[in-house]
Length: 348
Image (cartoon, rainbow, N blue to C red; front, side):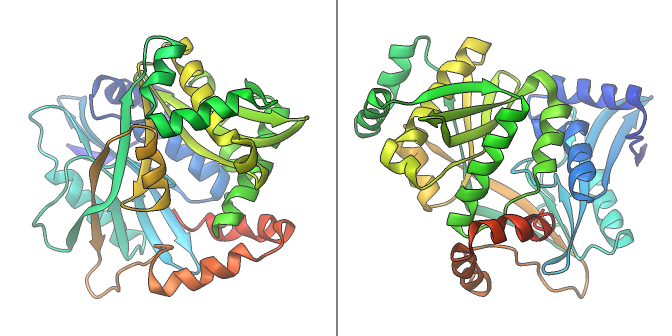
């Protein structure tokens, strides 16, 4: 049986969490807390579809209905995530969940739906499978601080050593000070990249929802935050998810210090892997992660387009959007921070 999940039922959410935790393909983006935090902070409704066999969950599809006045409506699994998609128990069929996603997209007037991982409906009418556009980066953590440093390729290791010699301080926490520092740094960082900043409420909702499974690591110079990252912990891996640095971070090599410090912090927490997330293939961030010794693993996504609807284009590197990116980079930071969340909540 396939039905809508009861996301307001604590017992059902706990059962879904347990299913995600027991599934090797489960990610933090599959957890109900993720899609509910997106809904609470951005106004993009959360929904989910469960597949049941004899009353036991054997399949799960988390969803957010994303609305953008610029890019149109999207049903995303999951919203503001680099992962998600259909999650099924071994031997179970994913087809009923694909069909349910199509039906829900039409019902919510979403011209598109995206499955950002998991089994994909290859060959199913209306679906396109995107491959090679993005890669993921993950590797094991070393068993000591020195071994972690030596695991970094020589050129990047030299940058980390220089960062260790600079007068930088590192803090980890979830206090108001940590949150304010992170948002100030992140807002400046994404403006410089030409991307609208997410509302701070999104970060607060994630930190509050994930509890001990999320924190902020910030690098300070003379009392000023210069680099900061909000990380999620899941299944023995740390995922630095929302991070960046101000202009001065490059001179101080604060980002190098930040990621190395996070590796050490994650191992101390009991993590065994460092998940550097995804990057667009052959982009600057793609090369940056390879320089740290991470090997790219191609990712695949399923994209559904409703009959007669145009394909959705929210790719910042596309010809239609790249000009807007360059304009955004030139906005004064206070202006970009004020209007950015209104745009970013519709990117999905």
